[in-house]
Length: 274
Length: 190
Image (cartoon, rainbow over all chains, first blue to last red; front, side):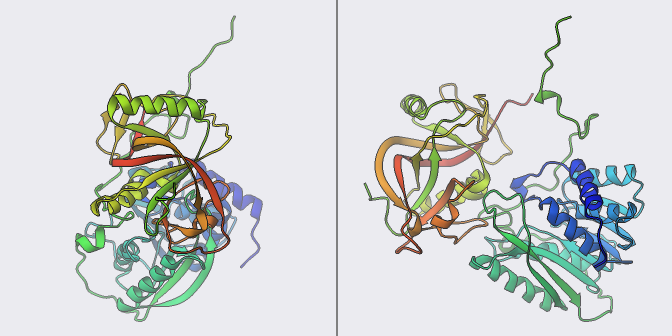
């Protein structure tokens, strides 16, 4: 890894965080802590240097960080194209807004729910996902996001899956095993695992970490496939936790003129006496 | 007491004290009155360790389906909770459909609330090292290790035996958690 100007990198990530919508815990939007975002963004940029990278969901805004670090000259490597697919219009809009403001021409975003047919494009070189971690469904929710990532690459290329990793708990080990098995069943192998790496704003499990699990396709050949909607009950019934199946197609953004500013209903003004 | 401390029983442990600038004694008096008037009360709280939809509801439903229930067991403590005593206007079981909170019921300074009956003072020790987190991201973590620092509440299952040192907390207040078990609460949105 090249030497990173840490102060500049942290300030850049701070700009991204300032632009990000608040997380909705009900949909497992749990944000990575800022220091880990710096290191993760640098690593993702290096891993995907010169490639077309898709993000299947990206509440953390690692996609934006990756593009912005390069644009600011803090790193001189990174993907040639980044597209974020997310079902939260606030996230999709935040990506577009930031890309527009900072002239990040290689960064885009699309509203997409991963339970729906993935309409493409399917010519990405790699995918990144940090999905719901599947504590209550043996990683089934992870597999759904992975499947869409694999489809985005036509089952070739590479994928980075960020999921729970804890030496003291049993369920993350079970999920890690299931997810690796799913990758192998779909023509990928585990190229690298970086254990116990990231921490989160996660008040019910403040010590829980995640790892980077990096998959690579065995074959370079494009696979012909039909993407189909995911509606099997056994895949969805515990998607967002025990007995919490998805019921929302999109989170819609309420448009406001004062984006990023304090909401009018948060305060009132008491004037100086003149 | 002690008849709650049986293997397999589910409890929601919570530290309680001053909340939204109201003393615990005043809260108990007010909630008891609410239960008398409306047959239930809403016990406000915050934090995702006992998120209504992803934690408390599925946890409680498991026991309800088998004819049982989970109990709210509380450790009284000195605390300063400076949240504004703003009354919530609406409640929702699923975060989608909202309805007004009945007039006699008051939840203040909270985002979530447990639906409780039979609030009573009971004194006993809860052996945290004989419990584990029942579900969620910390599922399987020993209760004695989990309840620590900023984590002051949890959905716990009582185990057969201790796992680790015998850490105990003194329970002084108990309630039954009844359907729909836990709800979101909010101010009215026009």
